Length: 191
Image (tube, rainbow, N blue to C red; front, side, top):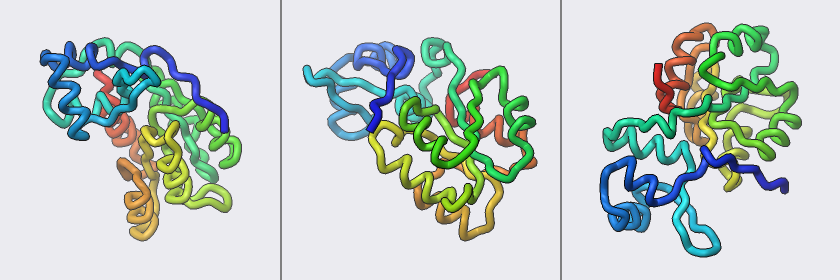
């Protein structure tokens, strides 16, 4: 398995989170211990927080999103086999998002494992794999568990399977502004 390379913008310390929330450092440790904010510990037992989890926490509890979290464009992967909208979709998402279009499910999973995007937009089926199977694979791996998945189109069964697997949202492929709004909300991007 290829280890993902984390950029400094992807990881935050307990002190940074305390500053974002304007609370004491001990409060952050308590929240982490109670499971209120997902985290991991370094070999030296220091708390670290991934950007998407911090954004989720801040939004959930009504904290403002600091510029430090909003500084770089979130990375969005498009896995939309059979849909000619890939270029149009990428154009609609740029310049606020860094967009990567994956050509095949195997290539996508390899590239996602190596350099996970913040979110992935995927069709209900891609080759022999269903969207739900791809989402399950992402959610099963520690390095990609944080990736937000948005399912395009799909019937009720496909939508339910994707949501059960861990999809964050469902959007119609023709609704590019809805997709952009959904990604902005999930990623904490400011207009």
